[in-house]
Length: 120
Image (cartoon, rainbow, N blue to C red; front, side):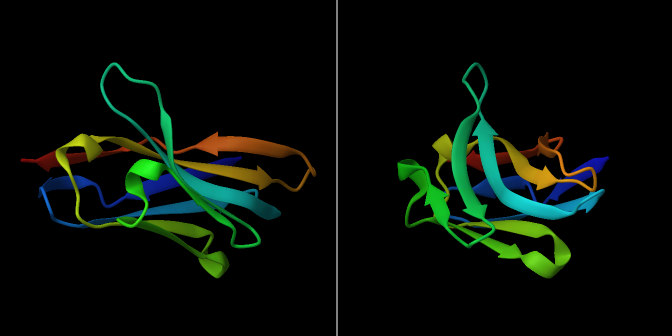
């Protein structure tokens, strides 16, 4: 089994910054992708940013220039540095990972989510 544990959410004023972390542990042979999605109330879960094993990154247009995704490959960790936060960034942020386990099967995993609230 694989577990994703997120941390770093909280309440911040508009214009402020937060840094999210997500650590993957368990039966991990390799990690193909790690990233962040978010879900606001009554809205679908949307891409924020992803990073592949080859360091290719992808960002939602709404966060480009404000958010930065980074990886610590040795620690199976992904970070999301969020700057210039806006009230519309308020959501539950979920970590996602696509992982090959010891049985050579590639699976998708989600973290439990961490709340980010940006006050105006």
